[in-house]
Length: 141
Image 1 (cartoon, one colour):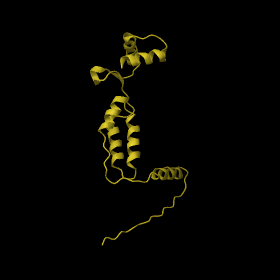
Image 2 (image 1 turned 45 degrees about the horizontal axis):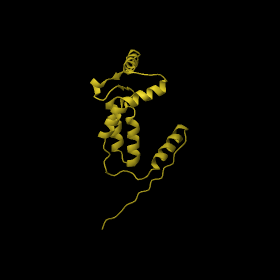
Image 3 (image 1 turned 90 degrees about the horizontal axis):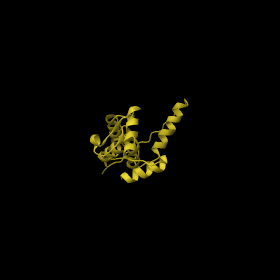
Image 4 (image 1 turned 120 degrees about the horizontal axis):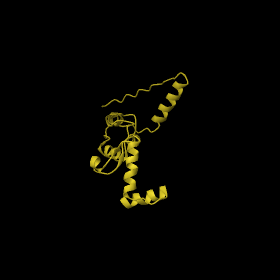
């Protein structure tokens, strides 16, 4: 892993790097105000801490997506994966592993998200919407 990082940085920066250079870069980033965790903090290694969205906020959004019934299971998993990217790579992956999408009733209609997009566009343009509701009653014998 370390040699892979050294090689990649050597290619990207086009200069020879050693361990002290990387430590200096991390210290420079900290001085510039970036919050960086170390191996002592996370037992993984250096990681940039992102503050775009707090973990509890992410949990609320992910739980809301998991609980909804109008999206397909596939789309739910895709959106949760995108949300987890707001955390740093390791925290996001760890969080994504903890999420479960229940097998209860979920929509099978992928087009519903396109309908939401169309409705949103119409509302933003001030258009009137016409809604037709169809009720189907199934009698059990």
